[in-house]
Length: 301
Length: 297
Image 1 (cartoon, chains in turn purple, green):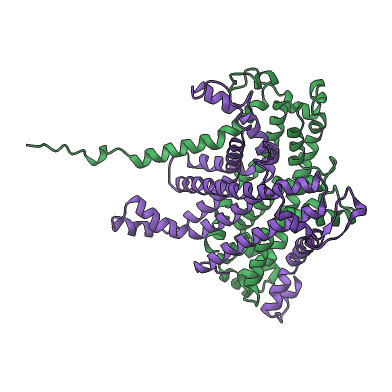
Image 2 (cartoon, rainbow over the protein chains, first blue to last red):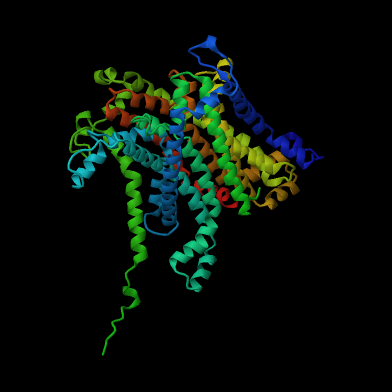
């Protein structure tokens, strides 16, 4: 730090790289190295339970993946999960952010409530929804019955479709706040003159929304899409507690399957191959999003 | 002949207000009711908590579920006793790990973010995108080597292993939040300080950082939340009450079929309170700090 106070300043280039050095070292050591090593492990037959059988097998783990029913099913579950969670989150977060952007009594309270799910660890979120969806004593059953909507208690999580949808709903509740904050932050910076101008042009509420709000929000929306896609794709803790992946493999997402492979079956080789496929897919999606940001022209770094 | 009845403007039904309030109340219920349910359960006796139809308000409110974490009674000792006794330790562990992660992140990210906001340098775009891409790497992809690395350094079941891993999760986003906020700080402030012959370090400390406070707060809260909520790494890297964090202990409640719903609920409530207080305290700065990051890119 002292160096920058000296009379002869270093060039901007050297200065900038020096400032970035600590972050780069930490990331290189703790992300770049492990991810390289993980690729190396994915080329091995490597199961902790059979240490003697450890050897290099090239791409055999990856070849195994292509015909691995558990893997293909988890990939499908994850893809659907991302679509459902992302769709619901974006719509709900956008409406809630639009509400919070208005002035009304109780706005502060609603904003505080909107932060609540953010403070909840995924595991605790899973616990909470388990007590709510419980077949014998759950709050959801109790509420619906008292409202006269159902006659008898239902086991919400025993059918594949039911478990999938309720797990997705639990996940949406948990991930909503972050999107709301980002969208609200974006909304709060729209200059009010834009709306005034639109009103003078006699644009209705819907046209003001599509022609002023949405274009202005494109960037925050893309950020939300990126982060929430990643979150939903690697979703695991809420599901781990809520359904454990069941019934059958109806809620076994790719991340959950990977953790089971590594933790329960201690198959490091196959687990690493799973992980590499997940990484490749996530990177492809994110590069797609980043490309979109660039094309929109408002990705200025 | 037709007589048109004109409703004076002031009698028009305020549709916009009505829609707004209906939505606001709907969202408020949606956000708070699930949490209310575990709060209510945490103050109930087991019998009341599992009754059909449910009691929506504790009829015989009790603190025994919370007291059990400090002195478990016979029944709590019997069912899920380990998770119960580990809860207080895990709360302490989570607090230490999350706070340390937030501090370390701010320190590292402030330098990096400053360079992006003030200096023109070759490779800045690439570096920035690279930071973001490391954030895209799923945790599961690095957990095995990370575990082996920590094992060879003898860091398994320690705070440091968790702090280091959470720092790498939060760092990229922290840098992104901060760089945009830093850009919104007027350069003139620093130039004025320089005229007053302040060194770089003093300028940063006394002029720049105080002005950038909302961004710093947003970044710190973000890092804290990331660390507080993380489960997978904590599951792999910790094994005893020396370092287990609250999500790991909470998961023990869930996988133990004997656990009482009420004790589980109490643990859940305790797990939410610290980060919630933090988020509420810094609510305004949080949105302000995020505003810079999400809009300008």
